[in-house]
Length: 53
Image (cartoon, rainbow, N blue to C red; front, side, top):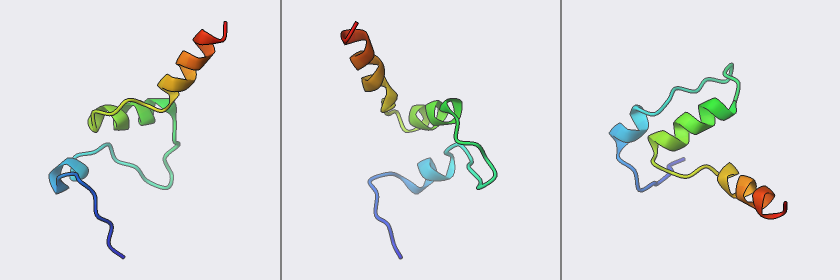
């Protein structure tokens, strides 16, 4: 199976390492999103909580 993405191979190779034994934590997610220069999905959740107060 092939997957096509609009990212450079080197960018993916240099991403934070993940193994099946790794725990998927917010710290790991933050590093991964930062590596790809993306905003985490949780930012919208935090904004919604702030707005509902």
